[in-house]
Length: 102
Image (cartoon, rainbow, N blue to C red; front, side, top):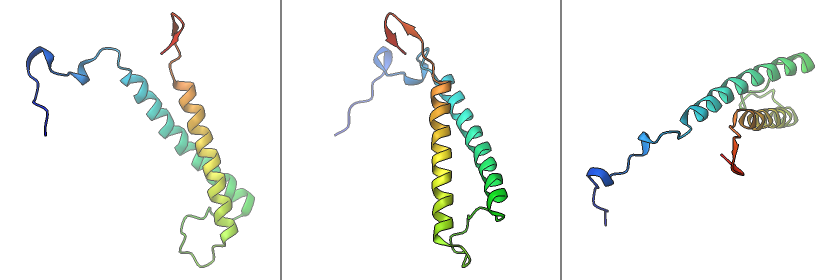
């Protein structure tokens, strides 16, 4: 059973709200994408300097060892998720008015 489509003044206008914070979300998304991209590149460079090999990206490679794959996965996961957390909190708007956090 479908609800009838509302017309006129009672129609929901979700995209027309003022101050919906979409600019902040866009800034957070762009900062996260750029930050994660740069961190993965830096991590790949550090991996190459430390091990002398390129980071494992092809799991079908017969020369790839499980320990190496797990080490790369754990390192990437820790670095990327920590960066995402830090970027999200750094770009979040924390305006305190009347005791409420927006």
